[in-house]
Length: 595
View 1 (cartoon, rainbow, N blue to C red):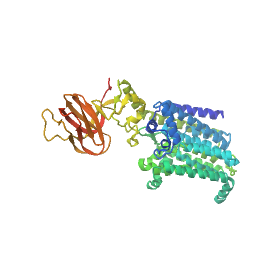
View 2: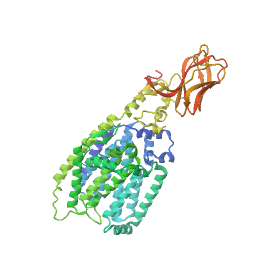
View 3: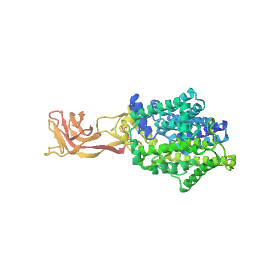
View 4: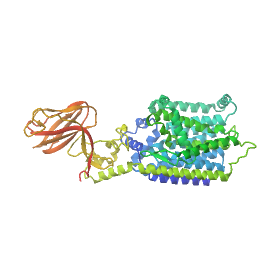
């Protein structure tokens, strides 16, 4: 127990280092944007997010956003504490399954240090799904085993409670019911399959009915609120390439401490093991399976839980991810985070007897167990742990170095702090490397920068000054990227090279139609006196006061239109629209607004 506790402490210290240099990224920003701008109600909690139904995760994100927006350490602490609970739960589960054996520490070391849990463990948006699943797996399976051994109702209730907890955060927790069924069928019944099913129905009828009811109820809830893709699309993507990447390229190398090398993405990384590492992993995995079969009486069934979850992962990726990203998505470990726990369980079941089981896996009589020695097993474990630590350090270095979010938001904060007045901003979106625009309006300044609302404004019209942030988060003057220009008037007016305001309504035609929202008009005008006007740009109507002199007026525009109408100004204003263009805004020269 003490050594196991020290191993868990070492894992948490290592994970704490990984988290200390991490920061918010991508979906984290979307979570905060939702929490900052939506009411905390059923709609907020049950909104489907990329196919995920995660009311528990959204509730935690809301609490953390209200308490510490853009302060990483509380969010990181939640991930670290959740990992600690999951690790303790796994240790407890392994003891419950196999007793206090030295090999349990070997299994625990695999769970603690393999790479599988790291990518989700350092990214809040992934961890808030995956870590509760691991907690539910560890504690739920412990309770399920107690129920199978004793048939006591309190253990059934505990199983459902832990699994229900996981379902609040991640719909993939539903796979635990399949794991429960496999354990019951393979270890707590005997005979041919029909006889096993009859035995389970006789002994555990209440549990089967209750768990089946929970599965049906949750499936209905998920279809209602969470499902935003067609499961049938899994048939449109070949499964073999997905399975090859998931199992052959990612899983097998991960089990021997790999992948050691990575293919960097914008921030995360795909497993990119060398041919030598892949070959070594296949030999090691195949050797372990064969050695277990050769030396134990009932080892083949031990791999059923891993086969079940891997098949489920292939189907899920083929239906919801691979059709967009490609089969290489299988090399992303966060899509099989649970493999760390499942592989450890399977390895234990392949070599050790399951306590309380009806059918027990025992050593074969008369067969030499050449590789069971503590020295050999300890040495192999040490090598795997060292390789896994190397793989983790390399992954974390890439994760920390390639995340642009922290530098961007630090620049945003410092730019706003230097400004001497609320900065008039066009409500643009942050760079695509931080949050894709398909998350609109969650990616916009007004949503993401709400904690600095006293330092910003988002006017519909602005005189002379309008700002955006450049790709580094520095405040910059807005410049227009024209999509439409005004047509010149048929007759020029003395003193005005553009459109003269002659006392009545003036319609300024554009050189093409305009459709949609998010447009800005830059209108350069000159006036000898202060005046006012009503300007209509599609569905946007602006009542503006125009000071004397040469100025640029920024105006929002939206809808379907092909001209801009100006009226409601004094009868003899003697002012002129020199230039008028419509387009989108982009960052120009960096500046300190209001300084």
